[in-house]
Length: 239
Image: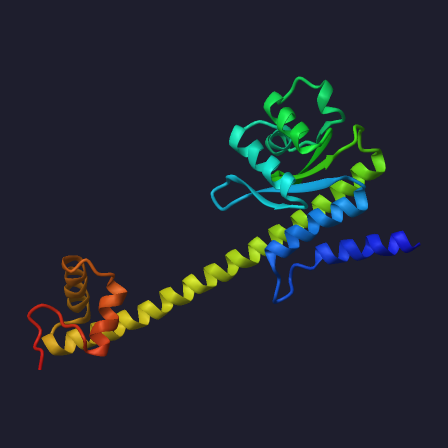
C-alpha cells in the first residue's frame, strides 16, 4: 500500500503544471528523478523539441547521462533519436551485443551503461520528445515497468503541452492587447495631424505612413511620439 501511495503522489506531482509558480526546469528534473526511483533504473534523461522543432537535452538525473544525451544529438544517432523519429519505444537490452549506433554504444560503455530504453513523449500524432532510461545492468523492461514508464511519459507530455498552450494563449492575448493599444494611439495621432494640417483623417493617416517610412520608424512609435508632442509630420507647424 505504501508503494501505491508513493506512486500516486508521483502522478499528482507530475500532473500539476497549472500552478502560478510552475517551474519548467524543476518539473523536468523531477520527472527524471522519479523515473529512476519508481522504475528501478540507474539514470534517466529527457529530450524535448524547442519552438523550432529541434531536439534539446532538457533534463537528466546525472551529469554523465546529460553528456551522453548531448553526444546522441551531436552524432545524430542513438536509440533516443530513433524513438523520437518513429514515435515508438526503442529498447536495447544489452548494448554490448548490438550493432546499432556504434558510436553511441561506445560512449554509453564509457559512462558505465549497458542497457537503454527510450519511450516516446507523444500525444496522439504529436511527438514532442523522448524519455530515456539507462541502466548499468543488461536486461529488458518488464511489461509492468514499460507501462509505468510510458504512463509517466504520457502524463508529463499532457502537462507540457497544456503549459505550452497556455503560454501561447497568453502570448496571443498580449500581442492582441498591444495591437489594440497601438490602434488607439494611431487614431489619436491621426486626429492631431488632421487638426494641425486641416486635412481629413484619411489624409492624415497617409501623411503619417509616409513619414514613418521615410524615418524608418514603426507607425505605432511615430503615433505615440505625435500624441506626446515629441514628433511632428514634415511641414507641420512646430509651435
